[in-house]
Image 1 (cartoon, rainbow, N blue to C red):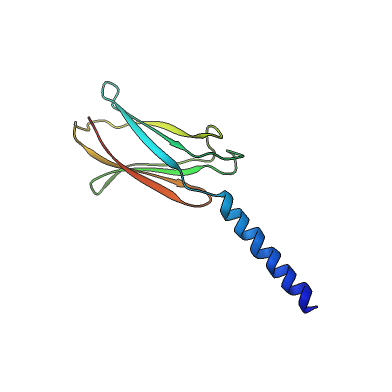
Image 2: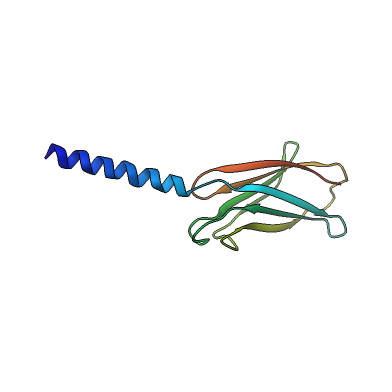
Length: 116
């Protein structure tokens, strides 16, 4: 009986560890600014098997101490990565933004972006 319990515990640990191995934060976040449309375009590499189950959950855009955008998602547009655009009215050239992306399973990544 003790041997069976040990085997079940080992299998449980292996299953939990393998789930975490497949979850990962986004990589290579990049942003571009379209001044004429006052639009920020954000992309990131986030390769997943099923973009309906494993996806970027939240995008947050912060200027200084003010949160400008907080968007939540229920799926990812493609299995290769994330992309979205947001209109940010009234920002001036030189504004410094922090862009944060968080995976729905595990991990997040943040970059700083200065408007040209």
